[in-house]
Amino acid sequence: MNDPFVTTEWLAANLSDPNVVVLDGSWHMPNAARNAQADYLAGHIPGAVFFDIDGVADTDSALPHMLPSPAAFAHMVGALGIADTMTIVIYDEIGLFSAPRVWWTFKTMGAMDVRILSGGGPQWRAEKRPTETGLVARPKQVFNAAFDASRVADFDTVRARSQDGTSQITDARPAQRFHAEAPEPRKGLRAGHIPGSTNLPVSLLTEAGQLKSPGQLAVLFAERGIALDQPLITTCGSGITAATLALAAERAGAKTVAVYDGSWTEWGSRTDAEVET
Image 1 (tube, rainbow, N blue to C red):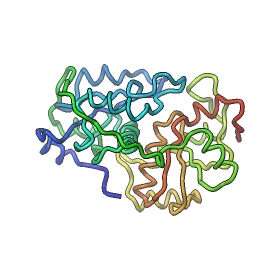
Image 2: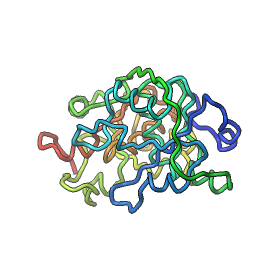
Image 3: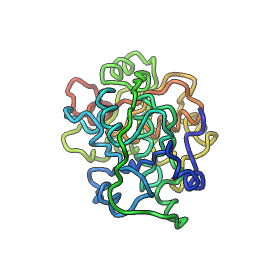
Image 4: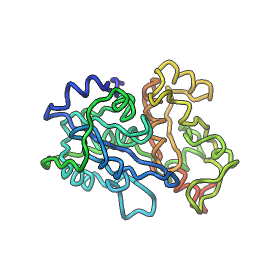
């Protein structure tokens, strides 16, 4: 794949380009005492628009931040001033945590050029680059959605692949949660993992807020018996770090990767879903 990352130097030089739109895609776990939108209002990269992962979503679903329909997505991001033809640069304030989810969402919806800021907000700030406060409003744009269904896996697909083994399933949650040795952060979920799935915690994929090199990532996948030349479905708690795992797999050379959008929030809450510990 083409390098999905841009450097802080590149972004600083291209901030004034009308074809470049910057998105703060920060999101935090439910048990984290942080409000991403409040942090954005207090300071963000100049011109950056806040992308609300929980808002630009299927709000009729009982599951968190599920993908909206392509038409609904096009309407919502067009109102934010984002066109499908723009260069979309996404960052988050952890370094590399939720930005890949936004990257995956735009790629799934057919955006032509989607990038992630290497090092994210922390690197931008560490280099003492400028920030601004308040809400950024951009002129409305037209986003022509072209949904790529191959990038998304639903419950029925994951259950079928779990049973027939024709796709590998890899879970980005911490090992303790995967093995039912620690409770889930969301109430009402059983502990454990999807039968036949492997565990590759997202914490192993990054270093100092940046994704490891393609070679390092390939070794991590190989160590867990994950064949990058075979179809892969990634999963996690609610579809956030599953996108980071998908990004890492593609960077390491995988060709066919789908994200289980409902992830463990859906699987662990369904009585018709088998669970292994």
